[in-house]
Image 1 (cartoon, helix red, strand yellow):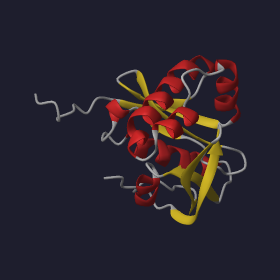
Image 2: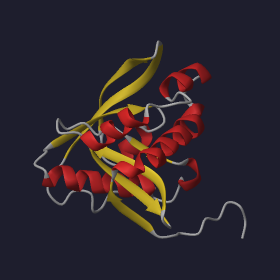
Image 3: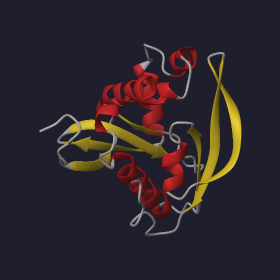
Image 4: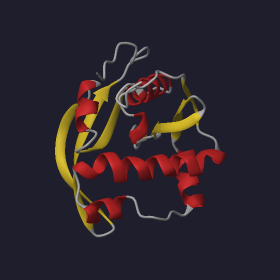
Length: 174
């Protein structure tokens, strides 16, 4: 087997639990410091994903949203969520799981859950890195903006999508 061939594995989407805080933080760190580092400066990356986290606060934030995990062969490799006010706040996939449909599966699930919860529209503040993936999933650009995080300004893109019950079944991220 060559390095660029990845076995499919078994992908499971499940609801976040308090015990998942550490795993989601590690995925977040790896995604920002790995994948997103091609679009942002080292200073911006450090501000966005500092080395340490208040795990109780992180866990509270994950629990306050409707957070879903992607597990590949039992390991947490990604997560996404939506808030009660219709924000798809987080979508992060570990770089080692890239190209396996994890982001597509997560967003598909989040769209279905949001529609079932009565949302008609979701919006996201997409990073430059995530912008193309969200476009492939049907999100449209509403505006570009600069977000300030710990004194650093990071460009991102406000995007949105209309959701209806049953959405997500034919999304294509490839």
